[in-house]
Image (cartoon, rainbow, N blue to C red):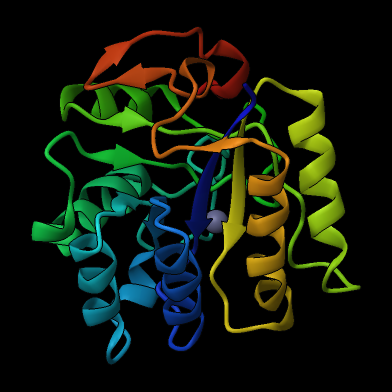
Length: 217
Ligand SMILES: [Zn+2]
């Protein structure tokens, strides 16, 4: 049986997060929300994140500012500490018992800009699970429904797809209910946990090689 794990990045978003939560609740589905600090400090955003957590979704750290990838050579001193530990502090009681971290990659493209050695060391030392992905259907591109076909093609091509979507209040997510119904109609199991090859670090333990994702700094 094919499997799909959903995740929603860059929020919370007023309007968008509620719509996604509703679509998931109507189908009794659980997912993960990887939050960004600059969004979480907006009015009303923390209540949205708390609602997601209360409804059984997992909440993860997706950096404080979502601007410079951790492995970029020109990242300022202490950048990884602010982005990782600063966001963990902001998440506070929203964090999972084993804290989850998803790096900012820029359009979901994996490469040596994603981590620095210092960032990975900090993530291991603080017991994080690092959560990557194997499907980025580019739900930010027009036409706004084209991501659905791209995501379905990824599901066809893989045994277990971990998709990155964004719970923005835009037209793209109005196609989420149709996407979910199509996936379920195809007999794909939608589950909350992630495939092992998307988890290079689990609870602070290195599981997969990250050299292809790590810059020299
Ligand atoms: Zn992001």
